Amino acid sequence: MRARSYDLVLTDPKTSMEEDLALIEEMRVIRPGLRSIILAPETTPEEVIAALRAHIFACFSTPFNTAEVAAMIVLALEQDHWRDAIEVTSSLPNWIQLCVACNLINGERLVRFMTEYRSDLPEEERGDLMSAFREVLMNAMEHGAGFDDEKVLHLSAARTKRAIVYHFRDPGSGFDQATLPQAAVSNPPDQPLAHLEYRAEHGMRPGGFGILIAKQLVDELVYNERGNEVVMIKYID
Image 1 (cartoon, rainbow, N blue to C red):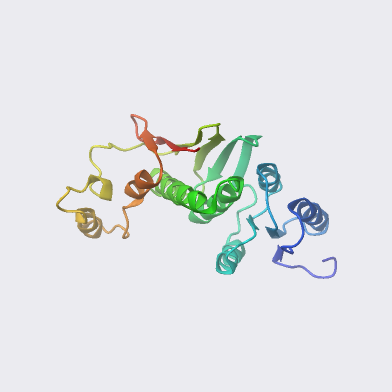
Image 2 (cartoon, rainbow, N blue to C red):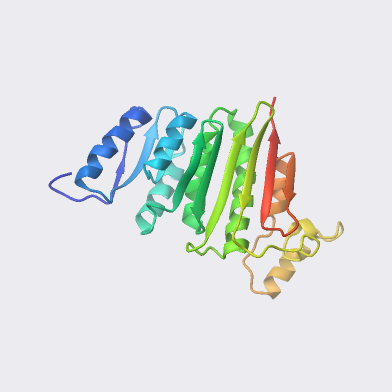
């Protein structure tokens, strides 16, 4: 490390998160701008918070998908302004508040951190929750901020005895929930794909299923009057 500069460090999946964080801290004394991805046997909410505060690019606990790790490595190598893109403003094991720069890569990083933050859930239940989380997050970043990393999204994630709650607030002007022709949630019952024609006519990318998918995967999805804040709730046993 002293003799040669490296673009990224990937830790040994057999070492603990605590050991990895200590090692990366030592490496950054030599190479301050070092990108790092942590692989660990397991993670706790406290360790995920520590990784966010230490500006780790991403973390994975076993069992992890090697293709997903490889994809994250590619994102890390492509991203230049990443170090302060996710800021922890308040944190407890059961409640964390974040400010996130609104671009696609930061969105993918945040989904990965939140997946590890809720590693206490059964895998299938966590997968459904994170799918809904990603849909709402990307919708807010795209439509509320235009994937502009000069704009910031505010997120709170809390766990109570009975529920997991996420609160998103994007920097956009909001939207009228009664008129969303570009979204599947607004389609008439007899025209389930009507929004795709609208999106094609207006030069929008394929998609528009985000809100509909999220509503199927969580118990409550509630928007404020302006449409730039949403609360997502998943009840747990």
